[in-house]
Image 1: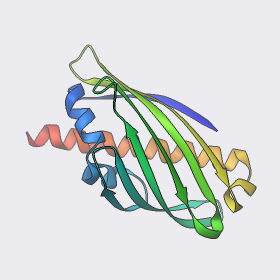
Image 2: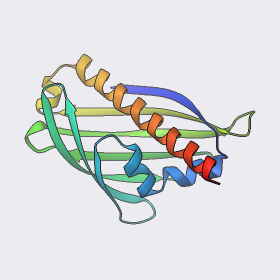
Image 3: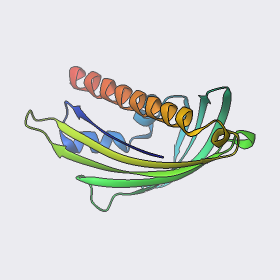
Length: 152
């Protein structure tokens, strides 16, 4: 399954990059996220509760960042275990470009594979849920960034 989209954020690129690497901001932005723990500058663990169709699962997972192209771009990969509900594995490539208005155009391409009960739900349901979760994350992230800009 593949997803891609872009969103305009009214903040400079370096501020957006820093926020995307801030566990507190990520925890607020990720739908269903209960906890994020930073293990190193490039690794973190997370616990997320998700409902996909009739299946509700608590995923625990690990994410590894490759920030060699920072702050213009970075990649992440990870995998999560949802117990009897199944597992997910995937990654994303993110590009941050300065926009004409002084903000940042965030573009991403993500890919994911699921297994277990989740995979049995059917690709349409899983894809539509993934798109909804992705859209929710970026809407939440944009709101957090707007609040930070208004506060400063």
